[in-house]
Image (tube, rainbow, N blue to C red; front, top):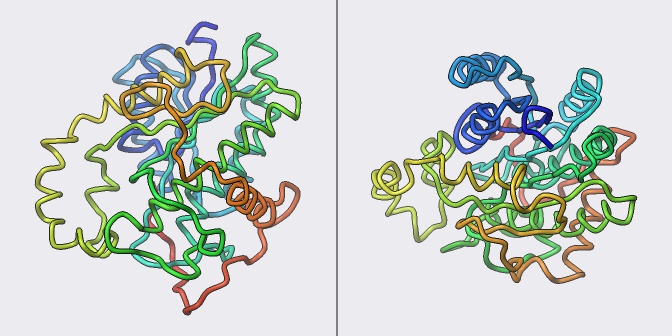
Length: 320
């Protein structure tokens, strides 16, 4: 299929890797739908990409990925405006400094990094399958992971019910991104069982000096890393200042060699790779999928669902 005939939705695309991914796709003539939480910033990003690429088919929509109602509204708008979708890039990420609950009563990192890709994909399966029939090839769902894809997942701590942050790499952000990868493996299986037409790829794009990373409070980092945060911030522009490399890995999953092949994990060098070991346990995968089904039913509002050992704050988490 020609790039100019594709319609692609990219969440969290007003800055960082998401915006650069949208830029790459727009430069190829793809119809790109940007999303961001801030309407002004989303409109500004769309205007910038239209001017920079000469592609008039870049539009902006607003959605808070931690809100089920906002995701349902986004899915309705995309379906009504376009009807057909050839790719969905779930790029938006949430990295709160402490355990916060969303308006739906869900821990915010789990809500934005796991539940949002699950729900938005399920809500948009109709347009995605229509796109597959139109193009003659599977539409793509690209879930962008991050953090450090290592460790194990505790079914009893998916929403940081027991522990939010550990000493080195054990943070809720890392765990939620690992849970996203585990959920994506199950999602790929369900898409195949439900008639195909949609291929699921998880991309670990690598590190980048993004607005999200630059704005993280010190307490967001693991305890042993916190004294090194000033050094990490100083080195970010030097080591990871180029966001185009990670973005190319994501864009390649939309248009490149992984097309039509579901259940694929792509590493930071852009290579098809083994799934992280922590995502293979069938018990853990089943627990994550059951939690997503319970918290985000396709035909109704999300119930309150974050049992807590301590009283968490209910605030808007940081998301992009």
